[in-house]
Length: 142
Image (tube, rainbow, N blue to C red; front, side, top):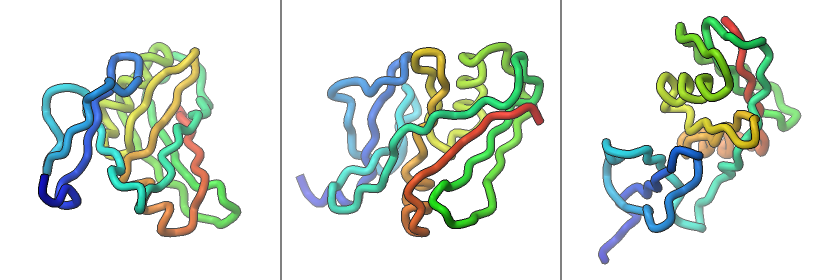
């Protein structure tokens, strides 16, 4: 099989935000067809990609759906903000807006009426390198 460490691992998510069984592939670039997200492939280097509940601070409809992300580990870091000019009438549209506009942040999905965010491997690795163990996210109307 060669050295798979030169390749990135991707899994496919279905419409409900669940990983499609058997969809793990190793490639240099993310597939363009399907909802694929990069995952950590080797247990020696895993970082925490636990889904985070997104606190929605604005009432629906949201005119400019935006998000702020910050660590919750006791240390102070400047929150990271991503701004959108898209509107969302409900939580499902909000997840779609975030997945469309903020692909670099990771994957957003709705579970039991709540919005969850699974950080991208790059963000998770960045925060892990800075000794951050827990993240929080909140959506707001900009």
